[in-house]
Image (cartoon, rainbow, N blue to C red; front, top):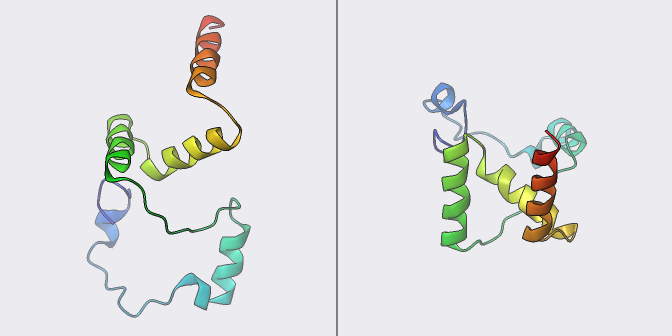
Length: 96
């Protein structure tokens, strides 16, 4: 965890979480997490260059690189291409 990826990093940086249990080992927290946003924690390998692009874009826009990756995956899953995204963006801007 770094201060550029988590807004509360500075508040928690000095705390000792060495004895902390994972959420999966705490039934109440596991149930609460399951109710939140329908997200699932996964571990996967991403090319370093791809990850660097998302992190740079997140830092430049003040966003979160994980959210940006999730959005890109959602667009891919919906079958959206870059052309579709650009076309929709232009249409939205022309209507303003």
